[in-house]
Length: 400
Image (cartoon, rainbow, N blue to C red):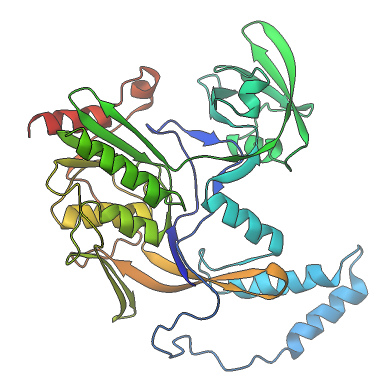
């Protein structure tokens, strides 16, 4: 079975644009056709490469390293280096080689599953790494970590000058192991030891806002997205909502099937959602499927620079089929497709195989999607708890 995935290599940020990182969850998902074996895209070799490479010069380099390098190396290290080098030689940031452990982590992160403590981090105005919020029911909250706690050290290593990304990586570790955080809480210095766990975050959050507006936030397009989004749609329908806000801000994408299923809640089964092309040849066309139960309910899609790939597919599908108005800032612009090829011993090669296009024919790669109404969300807005983009969506729907 083949699973198509469209996603971007981005860190997750907060739901209203706060530069936060959900601990130990880096969205390393890069816009893929995921499957076993080759994807048939016309059967031609467009690279111009010979059928086989002459490895004599590669072996010469290997022998020089083998005989002269002052250090310990293994055959696996050298082989992995060769494979990584072949992928890197494409010059394409989305073509990559994953070892078995990297491939496993990739799959877990795709489905919002990670090992960590369950908290959101940001850098505060003083430049310190601060806890935005511990996630209820997870290790950080159970251990007593609180919002606005400043993390001063990780396993006795100072966080002074440390990036949020580095802090996330340092806090990361196998489930069942401990990480000790130095905490500054007001004037009190604390040490809190937390046992890491495997954490799975639902990909869809929903609620009914004032004025009977249905709100659906999708943090990524994962295995549970289609089911959770459909359940939300049924609730919106039963509540007779007057409008819907689909929040795709900072959504790096994910499964193509999930994007099609979410889009199909609005788009009918004869309407185009996207096309995939290799060169100028259309290799796949995807249309709405199922029951478009939310069609004709006034809808706003919220996007920003962190909205990518499957999230952009959904945005384009709803907009171009006249099912949604788009508010926010220009999206990321991830319009290429990768396929995962399973290799020996659990390793995986990810290769760019095609580009995708919106229903109106636009190529969004490196261009993004420009919203119908541009609304900025500044750091001062965030500090004040003023979500200007969400407010703009509510004002738009109030006029319908």
